[in-house]
Length: 200
Image (cartoon, rainbow, N blue to C red; front, top):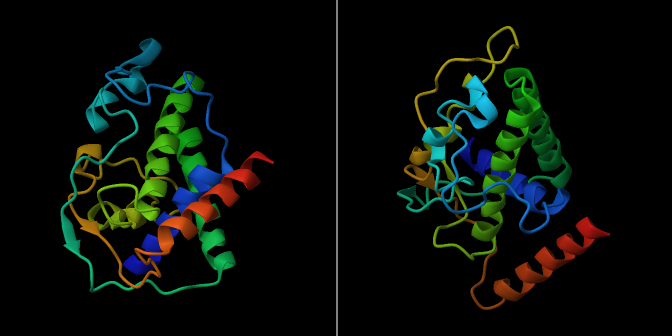
């Protein structure tokens, strides 16, 4: 189950970095540095925004990971269409959460940009550009079933974690085809091909 969640998260990162067009440099919302969005524009629903990742970490950069295990979980290749289906479900669920649980468009904008930029970090994990392996936080992923109530409505209870907890239960499934000799070049080629497709 976690291996499949990993694949979903992996492809979600590709969706975040490939299918969407990033904002022009200099116009993105507080990508780095200390920028507070607490009670942004006076909206009460933005009270405590900075508590999640911190005012100096808008996009949720993971500074430290605690690897739970690397060998117990092995990725299993599925048809790419199966993965794309699940990613589209997650994409639409993200839209549903933002539009049903935030009413101010300005707040929706800030929260979506934070979500979008945080997903983009996974691209670096996949391409082995970061200090951590390409994986996911199984502690946070385990709450997936808690975001929807039995009647299909979105839950509104506190799930008991914040962005500061991200990385504390990191799982890196084994079994990918990464090769230290050839993969840096081939993966970068795939990345550039995806970027070209995005901008065409």
